[in-house]
Amino acid sequence: MSACPETERFAALLRSLKSRSGLSYEALARKSGLAGSTLHRYCRGTSVPQDYGSAHRLATVCGATPEELRTLHRLWALADAARAAAAGAGEAEEHTPDDETAEPIEDTNPAASPAADPAGNPAPDPAGNPGPNRAGEPGRDRAGNPAPDPAGNPGPNRAGEPGRDRAGEPGADRAGEPGRDRAGEPGADPVGESDAAPRPRPAGWSRRRRLRTSVVTAALIAAVSVCAWALSNGRAPVGGGRGTGDDRPLFSVNCPPVIAMGEHDGCVREVQRLLHAKGADIGVDGNFGPQTLRRVTAFQVLAGLQPNGVVGEPTKKALYTSRVRMDVWSPRKVRQRVREVFPEVPDKAVAIADCQSFLDPLHILPNTNGTRNWGVFQISDARLRELGGTPREALDPEWNIQAARKLWSRDRDFGDWPHCERAADAPRSPTPRHSPATTRPPR
Image (cartoon, rainbow, N blue to C red; front, top):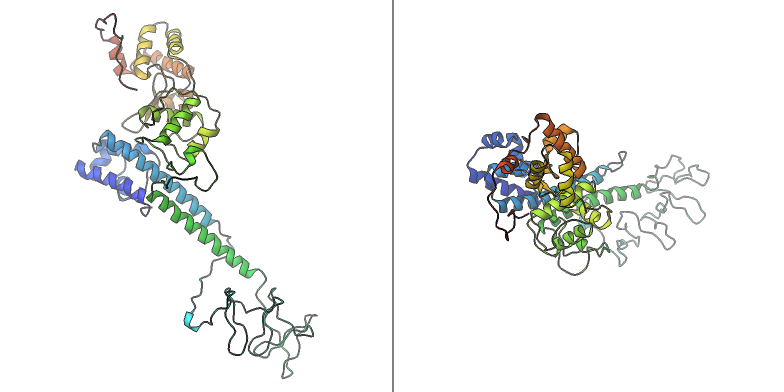
């Protein structure tokens, strides 16, 4: 795996972060909750995490900056895509028929081989007999049958049977052994003895051998192509599609195979445009920032894709073909429903929901340990498992609000949201009449 450049770049960044932290693998393992041997494989480039959360956790322990985390996320996405493509190529190679084993190709001495004619077949030898062609078979006459050998015996025909003389009877082989007549009986040899002729190779043997060679060659070409794609980061010169006839912008040569956080270009703009067309509340500015990451992840959840937050080929296809709609409840409707579900503490419940998600049902927040919080009340992955829910359900505002009600009902407090609970209980300073009521951090 380390032969692929993007895997090595991903590993190199992890090694750099580890070296800068000054921590040993054992210390990093204790702080990140990962096995020391696993961290060692990641840093060496012999393994890529199945989920970005492990890499994010490790980088955070090492003190990575936000820019380094964005770069790490992009490199992980490329390395993960290269690993999946290489695994697909390996499966193609493993499907070679079990009853056939590829044979080594014989190495011939060019100096000892006869010269080739214009058609690519070896020229006749000094006795005027044609040599073997490129496949190693004897030369053929105008009728398509092999020409006789130097002793005047006809070679086997295209079906692998011995050639026949003008009378239609098979000729003798080089050792003087007779061929067989049309009834299958051996003919007499020159000294009057009779013996069975050697069995010819079955018809189609060369075809199966060529098929095996083609399968192995195709698998090797696919593996080399994956690494070459990773080296170029998927970007090709402008001018036309990738040879598939697909004229959709995300599949053009202008866009890389994987679009991830930190990019700023027309490809990101196209992703944002497609999300906006499906009803998502998102700006179309060409900048793959936190809001685009949240909307991409939400779309993947709703479309039944792996919610990794990067736009690979499955997500690109779904953006063009899926009928998923991302227009959800407005903040006003969310506020009203929260008040109805929390009649005992309506104002505080609304304040906490507003603090958690800005009353956005599709709000998704990644944590420093690689987990995520979902929806209106930002239900964590741990609570989601405890409640028997899924990320898709957590993005449904009704399910999310009812789940928050269950958590609140245990002790009739908002202990699951300590930060926002303190903010909701804090006294508010007077607000100037002509100024906004609150100042929110950027989304």
